[in-house]
Image (cartoon, rainbow, N blue to C red; front, side, top):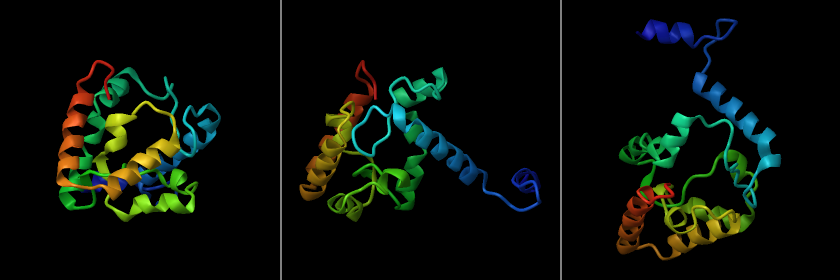
Length: 159
């Protein structure tokens, strides 16, 4: 099994390639090309009705099943269940100085923005809610966000 992985992960010149990095690079190139279609304000990238998402992918994203692998990052201690969602490097490169405060805490799978303004296009509102969460953190707030996340997941409009 390992030999098959090594065989299929070699580049055209026999050098080892990380297929996940190659795939990520292709995705980032597509995202940069699609910035003209961006329906969000600020550096956040989002296209409603994104043509790259299949029907199966739409179902997976609607119910946030694509977030399940992030539980591994929580178990490893790299992420928290609740906290500001991590932004891709391409978006972080557009931060202003005061935006970097959100990087002072571990990123989370869900946060205040996901349960209160998920469909809002404003980057500034996203930042405001993340910073509000950081400044007002409490166990009670985390429980409120976790319960709100469950409500949002099963709401008719979906996640």
